[in-house]
Image (tube, rainbow, N blue to C red; front, side, top):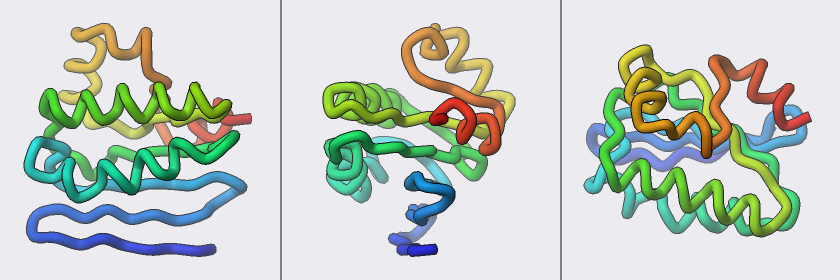
Length: 121
């Protein structure tokens, strides 16, 4: 297992290789303040041919419009390069908001990590 961590005040971003895919685990606010810390690194992974990414959101307590924009762009990059990104483990409140915005019809969402791995095949 290969793991790296980016740690900043009130925000962490852990990357690890697991079960033939990349697992990304942000922790804290996924917003305009933290997006510059991870955007480039996330897009770099998404632009790898045939990428398989699970972004486990269980420790994310807030997603604003810039965080949502990064999620949409990550999805588009993965799709463009023949890969897939699956977002899993949203809190109940964030899950409701995502469904209210109909993001579940555009992005790949799963209730938990195991089902995200199944979606990736």
